[in-house]
Image (tube, rainbow, N blue to C red; front, side):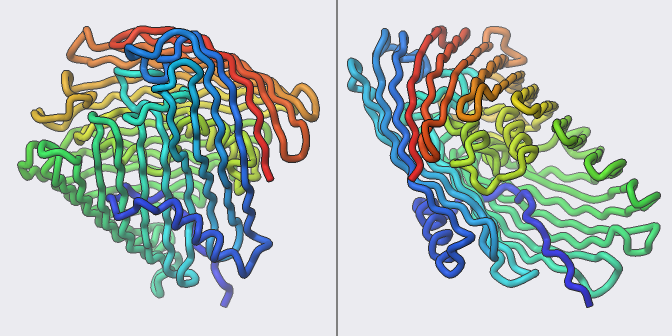
Length: 518
């Protein structure tokens, strides 16, 4: 009998906090130790990044706060290490840097902190037991209203530090009945800790069970799914939330490329101030694969919070990548941070620089990761909410030019009126927050060793029931980089940012960098 292909790693569900203080170090050790027997599949790269920045507003990186303003020189020296493994039972990557920022005049702003991003999968039992894990540490402003723009490379305030970690063991196997029946059981645990008084600590536990045979009766197929999520917002007002859902799905396979879905089920949660609320789920959808490079999917359901949906379009061509998605579902900050990039200074370099993501070799896949990174719209809250979002983007890959564009709108509404939120919570003075963000990024290969790149991001956040609650941010950069050798790169970059709303400021900055890989 032919051996069927191993199940690929899938995006895991939100997860709850575990004792993961040393999760990053543990993941690094696992990648290194597990790879000792197969050294050819493990790549370990020590790094050293140095930057010298002149800014005309030294307090901009701290959200334009009083104190430490005016011009200043800032030196950053960041030793680090990058580890990746792309074959065998363990695969993944981890990048860690110790960032040290030194101010010439405003020495009170001097700081040192760890920046880390890692994820991977371990196949503990062949074709049966898999363990997904990820971890991230960064200092980046998540608030929709206060502070500076997301992606500011000098956003070094300790109040903006966010640490995430997760581990998710899953049993996944082919079943002995039906033509393509599969079953899976997964328990996922995710935690978030933050130095911000408006975010605090959050955790999410999820248990999910899935059985499905979409082509079990050739024309008809079936599926059953159960999920239970227990979350803790970290405060007395937002703790101990529980959601439970069960769904049954009937598939109609009209052709190998087109499949209809009918859905019935039941759900319950206590998000409304601890009161139990339950109701039925009725919906439907379809999956359409008109070509090998195109996927279109849609699901619409009647839920206890109203109409829920999940729509997606993805298309890949030889020189371009396109996507559109829209969704409406119950969510939280812990769920949305999930597997997404902890997008600090490394957001673009994690994707564009192979030294940070050596496991990603496909240029179009690299652009998909870039679009995911650009499409993040952050929110700082401990509460549960309904998130209605829509986004789209594309990347055009030329011989010497790459152009990417992404636009996202997220409209988040509190599930219930909650008192006792933390002082910095984005829902403290409004029950509904809408954020619109658009980013355009362009890179041009000048020569075989030098390139020019530019990016511009504009975001606008508003409290829909409070017209005075509105913040607009603009962040733009233009830079040139040059490779001095196989392991050395230098660049010169100009950055401009502006914020209007709860904090008003502008900043102009020029940064020279020198990065080495050993």
